[in-house]
Image (cartoon, rainbow, N blue to C red; front, top):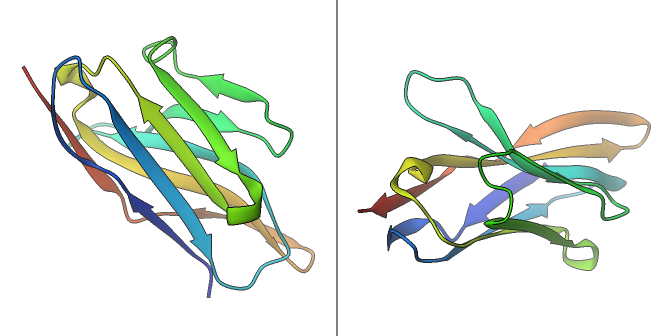
Length: 119
């Protein structure tokens, strides 16, 4: 069974850094694009950043210049380095991955990790 397990969330002061990790486990053929999303209560889940297998990245305007997404293909892991955090970054962060098993590709989500930025 394929799982995405996130870690690294927590409480940090405004202006500080946090690093999120998301590791894929289980049996699969390949992992394609991976990314991070976030969702505040009562709001839609929104894109934070994505990264392809080739290393192409895409960021939400609100995090450009502050967040950096990267991945370790050998470890099936994607990271989100968050710097200069703001109180408005406070919310649940979810990892997403397109994972192929055989010839079937589907989306998997992690369970979410809480990021809280105090002012």
